[in-house]
Length: 124
Image (cartoon, rainbow, N blue to C red; front, side):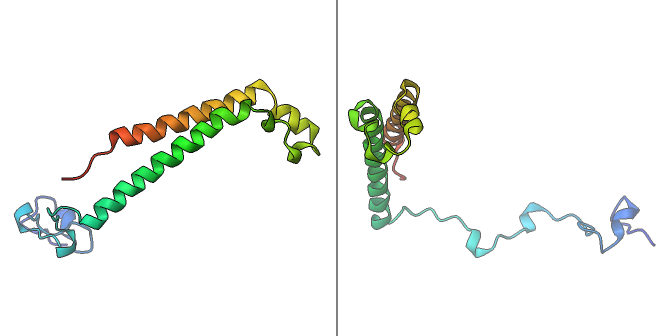
């Protein structure tokens, strides 16, 4: 094998090896048209869809969070007709630990929803 005079290392002269050709400068590289970055603002419909999506997400998180904070402390939580056939499961669900766990998940859900509302920024 005859080393390429352009390359300092004779092992890199094999054309089957990746990156065996001479180095290419950054100026010679061209990006495809699909990769080009557009600087135009989002459309009117896309902006309103994003606003409605964030509003729906915040409303859903807040509603589920408040329900999870209130419902475990109501009598319907443990006096559920679906739990009458499983008394052990009814005892576990009526325990303070499970009620506190559900309340904590509700508070976390409310926090996530409101933090999403506070951090919402529109693209300019």
